[in-house]
Each structure stands twice: as structure tokens, then as C-alpha cells.
Image (cartoon, rainbow, N blue to C red; front, side, top):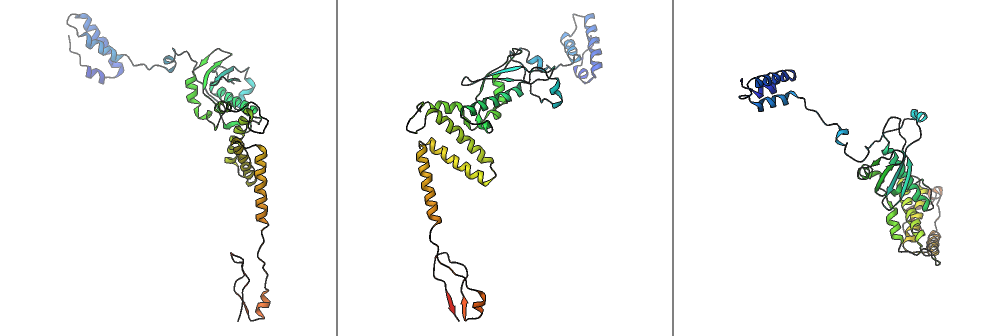
Length: 298
């Protein structure tokens, strides 16, 4: 049997590899006892093109539905049907139901649906704190425990969802942590000290005030927000509302007294008078410390 040179086969074109492999196989079947079947098999393998596994094939065994996140164009809103409903369960037991606006023929838009679920969660925390949802972006959204499409029954990998949305969920106000900390306070009080509900509200309002201060541009807004931050900080430190007002009244009184402090007397000397006399003006600005005006006789 003719010797097979695999190096030449590898260097050949793809179409020539197939012909050489078939020729080698035919020669081997003619003399099966002396044939180099390993070389024939290697030639056949070189003639077969390598195939890459598709992403869908690699994830075929996964029990979770694939991730999808795409924009919904304004032109498509008229042809959208009823949106699938996504049920999201967060750590702590909070459950949010939200629409997953999806284009016809495309997979459930899980990425967009989760963003809506996070906004619903943040608005819910703001409402419980007696505030509007304008600045609820400061609320930290806990990790996702499960995400299930109520319409299709598909489940989504919570670990993958958490990794993809970690930055979006991060906030300065951790509602679950504050809720756990509030258990150290009584449910109601009669002496003006913090109750459990008031502790949660003051904590949330302090986080909102700090977020607003970071983006405030007007000086009046800055002063007002500093005033609110001071109030909520003292409230969380254990001060009652009456004590805080008394502190502010004392500070206002001190500021009023400082503004009403006596000022050293002064007078103006006309330039014409100086020109017609032998007097020389030593200085025209008031000194740092009060002193008698100085006039020098020439």
C-alpha cells in the first residue's frame, strides 16, 4: 500500500483533502491486512470540517429561559398586544408583579421587565415612608430570589439576573437593613421619641435629602436641604422634635445678637475740606479693630 503523508494532506485544500481521504480508504479496503487504518482515519477526520456548537445548543439543558433585553421602538407600540406578566421575588419576601413589554415573535423582554420591577419596589418603599417616588432611586433593591413569567411559565436564572443588574440595584438606602434595625424601637411612643415607623421614615428622608443635595445647584435649595439633613440626623440621634426646635431657636437668637453687635463710629471727611486745610488723611478705610480716627496736622 502507498504510504500516507499526513503533512501533505493538511497542507492541501479542503476539496483535495476529501479526494485524498476517499482514495486512501479505497486503497485500504483493497489490502485490508497491510493497510494503515489509523492514517486513513486521520485523513477522513481532516476532510470533515469542524463545527462550532451554537449557543442555543450549549444552553439546551438549562432549566432557565434565555436572557433577552432590547428596546421597544415608539413605532411598535400600536401593534403590541397584552404584555406578559413577570413575578419577581426579592430577598426579604417582597413580591412584585410587573409587565414585560415584548415585541411579537421575540423572547420575553426580561431585562426591561426587571428594570420596571426595581422601579415598582423603590416606589413602594417611598410610599411606606410617606414620600413621593420622585427621588426613590436612592433605595437599594435586594437580590432576586426568583423571576417567573406568569404568562408563559418560564423561569429565569436568579443568579444571572443578579449579576446583570447589580449596579442598577445598588442604592444608599437599604430598606431591609433599616427595617431590621427598627425592631429595636417601640411601635408607638408618647414622649416624642422615635417609634419604629418614625425611625424608618427619618432614615429614608435623610437618604433622599443627601441624594438631592448632591445634585442641587441653587443656593436656596442647598440651605433648605442642609436644614433637613440636620433635622433628620438629630432625630435619628434621639432628639425629640421639641428639643430640635429649641436648639434652632437658640441658634437664631445667637445669630441675631451677633448681627446687632455695636459698630465703631465713623464719619466722612469731604475732599474739598482737606484741600482747604492743613490736615492730611492718614487712612480712609476702617481699621480691623475699632479705633479713633486719625488726622495729622501738617
